[in-house]
Length: 173
Ligand SMILES: C[S@@+](CC[C@H](N)C(=O)[O-])C[C@H]1O[C@@H](n2cnc3c(N)ncnc32)[C@H](O)[C@@H]1O
Image 1 (cartoon, rainbow, N blue to C red):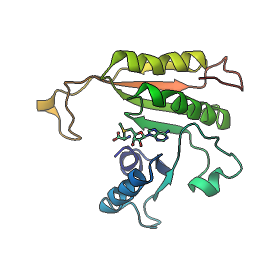
Image 2: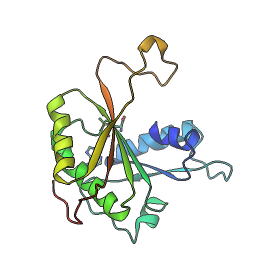
Image 3: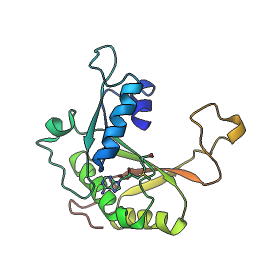
Image 4: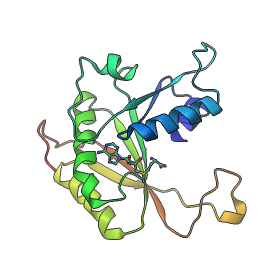
């Protein structure tokens, strides 16, 4: 949904939608098709899809070939901090992106089901000397939502993560 939003409404010039699970990538393709974004139509941008497994090195030399676009300016992640066990790999991949593009900004939307789990993500960002700040983005009360629709019973926070001024080329999780 985020990729569709970026392509259709936010003026992105290139979008690649990724997940580490091939079945999810297939589902993304179906959703792009249903939203008319899979076609190679020069009047609108095409959203590409790729399997991207966090924790694996990203090769700058083959990035355009692997992902169909140059290294992005913005990485957007929804509900990717849901489990402590995935956080080291997620943060490692953010570090890879900051290395490839030091000006890159990551926008991470976190559904806070468990505060300790989310704190693990912030601690890993801290250890890697990323800069991070919460973006003021209060939820729209459910009866006022016009779409996209989402429940407000579980808090959703938006965080901006950037390379940080003191980040070394080497990073740790
Ligand atoms: C809670 S789901 C969120 C999915 C989607 N972003 C959304 O908001 O509906 C978390 C996603 O993280 C993906 N994931 C978990 N570990 C991963 C990894 N190591 N590399 C890439 N994706 C991973 C899972 O496949 C899953 O689709």
